[in-house]
Image 1 (spheres, rainbow, N blue to C red):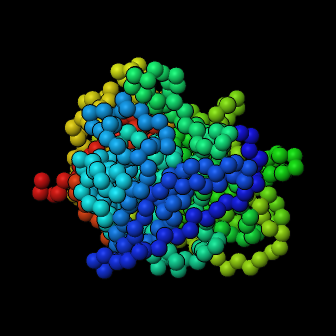
Image 2: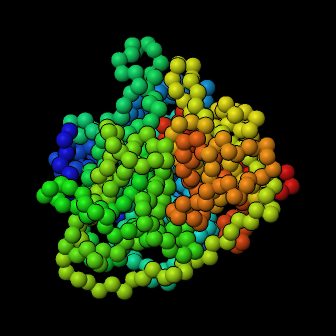
Image 3: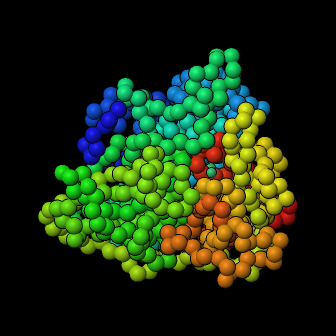
Length: 541
Ligand code: C2O
Ligand code: CU
């Protein structure tokens, strides 16, 4: 359907309320429901899956150092909203079992393994059936980590792309007093925005492509596509929305919640009558990313790059733009390699949302202090292990293209069901070098930890057998890659080195052991088959 742009206002997801307490801590009970939701004024209501009966789900507001419990209860119908592909890990997934499988992961959470949302810890309606890794109903989030923009989303093995696409995602915002005292824009001037792309059928239903559309019924359902790119921008669950703001500073917690799409963002002046974008508008002043605040704010002069699942905490000052309209513009092509430019790309999605700045001047006593917080550097003196981890492409048994993760020894890639190859111990510092041997960018994510980006170089320039990384040979991280990251974009044919410490350090984070996932966060890739477990051992193991 040809939907008129900039009709509806950007909704705010609202905040989840605890339903009681457990062990003296707030206890949330969040149901996952199938609901009808109006995503555009001219579109019939769309059937979506939502946490708390809404898409995106309600925001969970948590406080650093104050743990909470959340019970995520599946109340979804047995029939999936979208076609499952029963050829994805049939050895691990009971496709003939009735019920929709879901499991919730707190992305960016420094969380115990039993509450991490292992892909095989799924459950069906009201926990009737549970997966082999299922441990408990009430997930425990310790919240002992820097204040940050986290998000929760489904993580069920082999169908995460479909469950998230159906709507299973929401914000989880962690705060503390130090951050509150900074004087950043807050309250109604702090807005979480999740950018996604979708496709719709004329009746308003979600469209998700199928790789082999007209296959005979007896054959396995070969539906998975290598990547998904929608033709419609959806922000906080509204199609091409507009955001009215006052001419003052705002804090935006940006999340790329798309399945596969990268965004390369900038605000442009926009002429609504001519439907034309003009020169650059106000720049983003970035104050944090995935894992919390930066040490100091950084002005983004060019584009702000956001791979799937990356967050950017930014302040924008609209004071000089009273009465003007601005476009949130994306110049990343769909099949992103790290290069901007959408010329001739039919799958590009340049227009994301509109910002309408009010006419009348307002008072603004918010500020962006020159020092935000302390971000201790992960020292490299103590590195115990340097891992060379490959991002590769292959063809599966059905002749379909798939992506894999490998090691220095197994560079052609391993699968989700191969034995664990990464086993750091608590207290270890490691360098993980993601070597992208493919022709497209992949946003690489580690559960549990936050890492620091050391830099990148062409993959051919780095020899994993050599003794360490040559600091002279690597390009320093981008401004938006400072601080604590849990996702890093590894562009085509480059290697990105990150430093990671396992366990509590510098009074930050917690000691957790057990099995966690690392994976590409393009969810089609994660499902097929760019996800691997790693295991954190206790010091004595
Ligand atoms: Cu955002 Cu393994 O997930
Ligand atoms: Cu990928």
